[in-house]
Image (cartoon, rainbow, N blue to C red; front, side, top):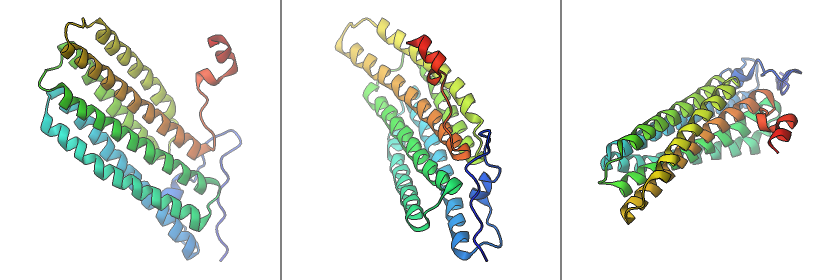
Length: 261
């Protein structure tokens, strides 16, 4: 039987392919064995990335909680858990490269694999940033966080966790419409980062300990901000996976770029 052709990259108006989820989930009964195995591998990759996203989300949350509570045990556990995330990312890399080499996919299949590679690494980077937050717990211990700082850090941790979870939902649902929601949420994270930096700058450098604490808090804020940025990038990869195009940012539009310049 002839091989079932790949669907086109997208509709003329840029709408997502209707059959994108079938590239993840369904295996056509009449397909040749080689093609059926290929689609099974795509489905396995999807499961692996969703698992990677769940582990990363848990790590973001655990690292945040360790910092809020000054919990060294939780911080060390979060740091150790990153090894499993690294191993899973490596496994996803190997599977993607093997599929590219053996199957030479085209159109939607190719976009799915390329997007999967990038999304896995965005998640892995978020996990690394979470490890940095957990390490900040060690550096700040035993000094408790100032109540105002604690409140901002708590909100930033929740924001980073929610954005990572939403980005994972975008991938799991193969839904490019999440990209706009994540971009809007990222604005809220930017405001929280500014609030944290304003507080840090207001700290009087009374002694070396105060300076070191201010530096650690500023770095933590930057880590949360970057985790949120990775979530936005994941959603953009989903847009590419579904439509073959990347979303246009406001500052990328000529009329807006001219105003900024």
